[in-house]
Amino acid sequence: MGLDKMVCVQTGPNNGPGISPYYFPDTVISECLSPTYSFCPFTDISGCTDGDGSVLFYNTSKIGYLTTTPLYTGQEDFDLYKLYYKDPYLSATHDSTFLYVVLGHTISGSSSTGRDTQDTTNINKLKRMFAVMPNLIYMGDFNTRSTSEPGYEYITQTDPDTNFIMDDPCFFPDKKLTYPINWDGNPLAAAAELTTTTRATTAPNSCGTTGGGKDWYDHIFLSHSIVNNSNYISYIRNSYTTIGNDGKRVGVSVNSGTNLSAPANVINAVFNFSDKYPVMASLVTTNRPLGVSNILEETGSIKVTNPVMDNNMTLHFASFLNGQNISMAIYDICGRLVYQSTFNINSSTINKNVLLIPGVYLLHFISGGYSITLKVVKE
Image (spheres, rainbow, N blue to C red):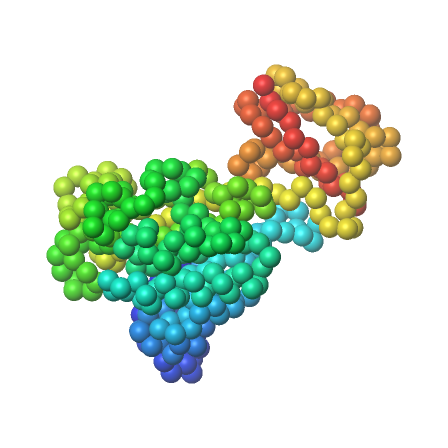
């Protein structure tokens, strides 16, 4: 969860430029989240020049934190956070999948020149760091007025190195919108995606702008590897959402009239909390099929009769596995664990009674220094 365009936070007890106290992120966790959450260490090399900053929170039961790297410093810092997925078999395989997040707030105003520089600088620095774009999310308040702004185009369309072009989910892969769109001139063209503003007037306070839904400033850009599920983290199609925007908010407040896009308490919270609608996207993980060099895979050592009929799954084991204990985990196509068992291989053929709905599944086996993943179809 990323918070941006908020009053900049002190990076420590003795940090001068920050305005909010250094313990503010801990207060967010204690009051709004849960003890399983933490926040990534962030920088303020810009010295709170424009008064704004960003903080990234993460669920420590699912994600681990590794590093923070400043990409751009000026009006405020854009930090690159390196995280890793806590794979259930991490202790055995010593291997995992990394997730990178860039969070920030660009320069506002009718002229895009300043924010174009920020966006192109960030992408170009990523190009010097990586051969191809990794599992990466670039999100925040981009102050974009249309898809024709050079900075937005460079992120999503015009970078000559196509390895680093990112996807704006509403355009691809969800295909709800098509380029080009000028939502500043025609808000109805992207009515359900507008994030500015939640309020038609200065109520409940004068913070931010007024006028109801009129612009789409806040975006979540995803790298191709996430959209294409090429590195064990995948975007769930059509999950990108502007929370509280039912597509009927042009010129009116989020809580004006009937708005059934979220529970009433959420709608009212969005109205009171900020002049920006929050945006979200959902990702799923698929466990890595192999470990590293200390994990041995021997093709054909374990086989499964495919497709699986009824609830009877027939497993076939090579002779060298006889007598060993083995763990078996079954994941659905979204990476959710649906079955788990540990048993002794006392025969070359073992039948397991497993209740599965029709679909595609991954079977992951671990026995000592042996690991293998198989795909099965349940009819």
